[in-house]
Image (cartoon, rainbow, N blue to C red):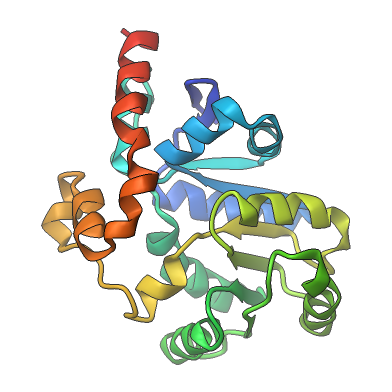
Length: 240
C-alpha cells in the first residue's frame, strides 16, 4: 500500500473505496486494527505529543482526513483524489457492514446522539446490526462501556470522543475490546450525520474550504484551527 509522511506522520494513499476494502480485510483477518483519520491538527499535535505520535504510528491505516493533509501528501507524490473523512466514511461503511453481516457499534458524542445515528443507519441499511452507547474516555466509565461491548461483540467500533482522546482510549483499551477487529476514531462525525451540526455545501468541500464553513458555524474552533498557518509553513519548509 502506497504511503507517505507528512511532518513525520504516516498517511496512506488510499481513496474511499480502497479504505473500505482495507477495513473489510481487517475484519476478515481478525485481531485488532486502529484506523486513524489524520488531519493537520493530528500532525501538529504528534510533533509535540510523543504518546499520540506513537499511537498514530501503530495504526493499521492512516486516512487523509482534510484538504490540508491531502495537499501535503500530494506534494510528496501521494496520489489522492481527495480526503477520506470520518463523516464521509460512516455511511458506506455501514452499508458494507450490513452486506457482510459485520456488527457495528457507535460509541461517544453527547447522550442520545449515537442512538439516533444508529436508528438512521439501520433504517438506511436493512439487516444492519448496530448498537450505541455515549460512554466516556474517562477510566471510570470503562466497566460499563466494556459490558455494553461484550453484549454486542461488534466487529467495527466507531469512537466519537474527539482527538486525541478517542485514539488514546482505543490504544489504552487494546485487547480488552471484546470482538472488535477495527476501531476508528471519528471525532464529531455523529453530530454531522444526525444534523446537529450542519456540513459545508458540497462545493466548499470539493474546493477544500470546509474548514472555513466549520469556523463560521463553530467560532470556538478558532483555537484549534490556529495551528493551520504554522502547519502550512512547516510543510512548505519540509517538503519544498
